[in-house]
Length: 278
Image (tube, rainbow, N blue to C red; front, side):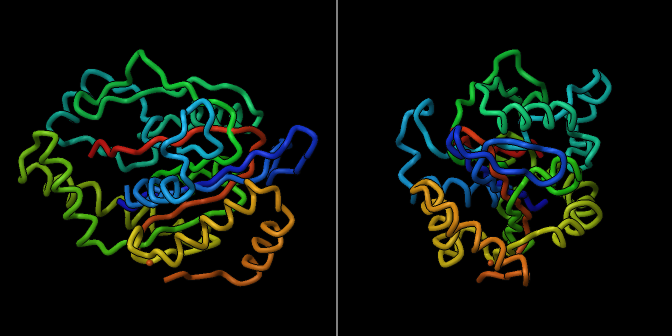
């Protein structure tokens, strides 16, 4: 399934912006993406030079929706180990925990983010510490599905990747995890593809920007990087005008398949890569 990306930029403490919906926070922007999305996020981090910065000092951070899979019951875990559990369904995610974590990030708090073992399909007791940052990239396959979470993002991006490319990357990834080809293809046709068509693809309508070809679309990625640089340089007015002008007419940039969104929190966070469990 196509992932979604969200980008969050946190503003200085003395600047207050009214977030979409019920949230009032100090922020600049948040942007969201997904695996293709996570690859796009990693490229953005690389171009910004943030991938070599200590995570406690980063101005840009990536947070994956995959961190928020629900804790499975023994019966569900047994099915998951056989490739018979649907990780691409909206009910697979702990939306309450996700909402609470993103709210804390928007408030500029230091947050403990859960870790998930994609081999055993278990939430680990360890957590990852996310420090306040200027920009947060939130990526996931269903980042736009839940309205309360979707409304947190100031800019939403849909990364559109060819279905054959998505499948080939999934096969290579899952085989490295020790799964056999038959199980991978069965899971794809039974859960992944139908869930994408039913739950993920319809959220494309919420995207402010559509990026075809994913990480291969350097024209689009460079434009996003420039927006982030404007925010990091304090030119929030220029960025805001660009967003407002862009929303007057939905933009499709030169890329097929994942959705993402942008949100403006109030502190700095760090970037992490995503790893899909299925």
